Image 1 (tube, helix red, strand yellow):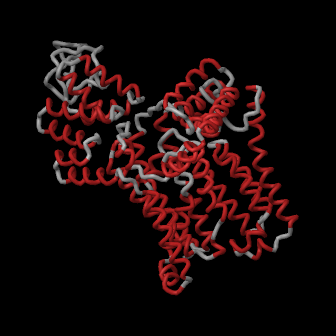
Image 2: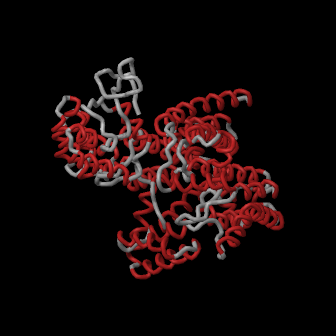
Image 3: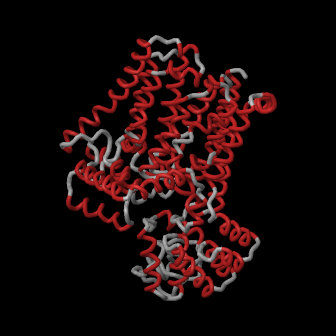
Length: 588
């Protein structure tokens, strides 16, 4: 493939990737809502920079700064309009596709592999979804992909110190976005220093023959680039807080939250927030508490290591089986979206496994392969969640591109290659199956089968503790005009998943139509408690709930934020706006 054709195919991949990003931006970000938790803290950091020129230091912990700096730059360019900034971020996320394409092209010396890596990342729904959220996944994934590409460039140039210097600088930016990459630096330095000892694994004579002095200079350049960008932030933290804070104080708290002895121990965080004003000292207390918990119950710690590692790589569908979904947007509420994402995820990892097994020895990029192993170990000792794996699966797009770009090579290697490769491949598939399998999927799958058949009663019987069959039953009864039956079904769903904004919104709407103000207020309070009493939910309610025409309007009554079916002012009611029988005009 010529360079011109390669560029054209990459441009097409970017256009393909733009479609799901714009679609999901329109679905979940056009209202410009900032959700409580991580998003709110990144937003506060950005606003503080825009308004005062300094960072936000008065939260419950100190967040890494680079995402807030990035958002502040977008606010400065495009104004204080969150939806626009998220749209720009979604478009900029396409840059990750180009980095993955170049990494695959360089490793396999194949333009076709580069195109395939870009296409895989373009259509991957989780990447598209997080591209329009105020979270660090998109920026961190971009920076880690750039770090790995620079590491590959240095490897192919006999560990040229200039490339390693740039690699260290970008690595520092990634660490200032999410600090999980911090402790991987010694691993990278070790691979540079002792590359000769790894020759039997990487089989690269050029690297093997490098003199110790060149490897040492390369390692120093890598560390120097890293320190050059990280040190100013660390020194600033010491000046502000009087303690050495390398990047943030969130890591120590996450370590403690992942090693609680009892769920109610979490409440200590609010006590510390009130009684320990210094963020560094607050983190020290959290780390000490975590270590105390581990010493008190080491077996519990060991069992949780496995559970958190498995949780990191589990399916998104498991959230639905566990009655955990909260939001109203497509990626939060739709089981079909979760299934589609999981199917992509399974195919991606299986293809990557094929690529890893049948790649030639010199095509094994050790930093790239060790990155997900390192991330899994780190999650095992702190927190494990499917969202946290998104930056770790960079390797999967690169290696999955190989069998798609060169299937004949894979078939030939299967038929005529070493037997151990086939054994490793089958063993890897079995290991992934054991990693993904959970017994809850059996009754959940049976329940969903009956829902697809339209039999909600059998779906409920298959998994009575799951909220989804009751939601389907409520939707069906409401569409049929049986509001009392629908409310009963939604109540049953709320008993199983009281966090679901969709369920509580349906209850709120039906209860206010039944003049049950207390019940409607309770449903509205449940929505607000999980942070979804916002414009995204109100916009969804306007577009999806049927019109409601009360005899009179009480602006203090609980409602999902909008009024419907208001008449246009005329000569007899000039300046007035009241509920009537003419629909199609909004009144606020």
